[in-house]
Image (cartoon, rainbow over all chains, first blue to last red; front, side, top):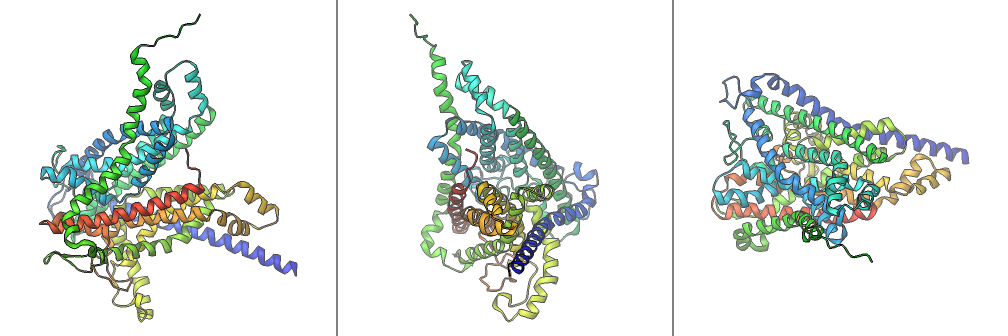
Length: 285
Length: 311
C-alpha cells in the first residue's frame, strides 16, 4: 500500500520536474528566435560600412544608411542622461540617507513611473515641449526619455548605495566628517560601480524606446545634429521602415534592429558582470 | 571648562542645505506622476466636456463625424493583456521556481541570464520580429488549422489574419515574461528557508515542497507579480501596434484584427487635426495611464508585503 503510494509520489515528482524544466526551456525559445532572426535579417544591411556613414536615401538608390539616426539617438539619449542621471543619483542618495515616510512616497512614485506607459509619457512631452513651440524637436525627445530614465536611475542608485555597509558610513562620521561629505564623498564613490551600472541600464532602456519619440523627436530623413530640430533615432527607423512595403527599406529596418540589439547585449552583459563584482566587493568591505 | 565650539555659519547650515537640496531632487518623481496626469487631463478637456462619461462605453471611432468612443480600444487592451497573462503565467512561474531553487546552479545561470536579456530587447525589435517572423508562422501553423476545425466556436470564428489579437497577445506574453519571472523569483526567495527545510525534513519530495509549501506561502507576492506584469502589458505600445491589425472593432474572434489604447495613440496622434480629435486621443492616453497607475499601485502593495525590497 505505502509502496504504491511512494512510487506514485516519486513519479509525480519526476513529472513535475520535467514540466517545470520544459516550460523554462520554452521561455528561452523566443529569445533565441529574436536574436537569430535579427542577426540573419539585419546582417545584409549592417555589414556594409555605408550603413553607418550615410543617411537615408530614396528607395532604389543604393548606399542608404542610418548615420543620422545613430547621431540622433546619441544626442537625444545624451541630453536625457545629462538631466536624469544627476537628479536621479542625488534623489537615490537622499532616499537612503534620510528615509522615512517621504522616502516611501518617492519610492512608490518612482515604481509607478517605471510602469507608466511610454506612449503616455510621449503625449506628456508633446503637450509641454512640442505644442508651445509648434514644431517637433530633439530636445522634446530628450526630455521624454529623461522622464523614462529618471525612476530607473533613482531606484538603482538607491539599491547600490544601500548595499554599502553601515561601518563605512560610521567610520566617516566618527572621523568628524559632516553628513553630506560622508554621503557624497565616501558612500557614493564606494557605490559607484552599482550606480554606473544602473545609469547604463537606464541609458540602454532609453536608447531602445520608440513610443515617446513618435511625437517629440519625430524623425528626420536628413543629417541633423541640432537638437532644436526634429531628430531621427534608431528605434524610429526600425518602426517606420519595417511598416513600409519596400524590401530595401525593410532591410534597413532589420539592420537598425541588429545595431540596437547588439548595443543592448553589450551593455547588459557588461553590467551583469559589474554588478556581480560590486556585490563581491561590498561583501569584502 | 570646555567651551562649545561655535561653528561658522556656513558649516552649521550645510546639513540642512544637503537635506533640502537632495530632497528637492527626490520630489521629481512624485511631481512627475502628478504632472503627467494633470497635463493629460487638461489637454483632454475638449473631449471630456464633449463626450462626458459616455466616452468610456461608446463604440464608434469616426474622425470625420467627430464621434469618438473608447470601448473598442479598452476591449482590445484588456483582451490582449489577459490573453498574454494566461499564456505567460505558467511559464513565468516555472522559470521563477527554477530560478529560486537553491540547487541547479548551471540551469539557473542560463535561465536567469536568458530572461534578463529578454527584458533588455527593445519593444520595436519584438515588433519587427513579430511582424515578419512570428505572425506568418502563427498564421499557417496555428490560426488556419484551428479556424478550419474549430471555426464554429465564437472565439475562433471568421477568416484569420496574420495581424490579429492573438498574434499581439503572443508577443505581449513574451515581453511580460521577464517581469513575471523576475519578481516571482524574488518573492519565492523571500519565503522563509525554514518552511522549505521543514517540508523536506518531513520527507516531502521536491514537487510536494514546491507545490504545497513554498508556492502557497508566496501566493500573495506571485499575485502581485502577475498584476505588475498586467500593468506592463496594458501599456505596451510599439510591438503591439505592429501586429494587432489596427482596426477599432469589437470582434469576439481572437484571430480578428483589433486595436489597443496605446497603439491608436501611436498611429493617429501625429495625423489628428482640429480640436476634438487630438483631445479624444489624449483622453485615451489618460484612461490608459490611470488604468496602469491603479494596477501598478495595487501590484506594488501586494509585492511589498511579501518581499522586503532593499530598503
